[in-house]
Image 1 (cartoon, rainbow, N blue to C red):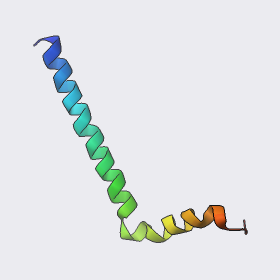
Image 2: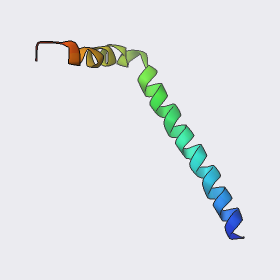
Image 3: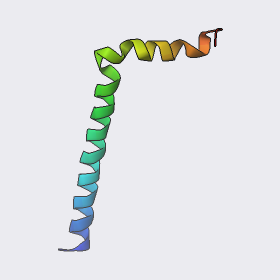
Image 4: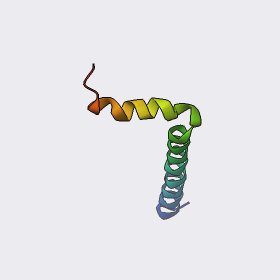
Length: 50
């Protein structure tokens, strides 16, 4: 196996890995149970009560 072949496999594997991580983060952010938590976090800078 040549260096170029190994580099190509590593690059493609890394791309797939990061794409799966991205999809996991997207699913976490869009999960219905998390909606209220994210809305509350979005309002935090605007709230005067701490």
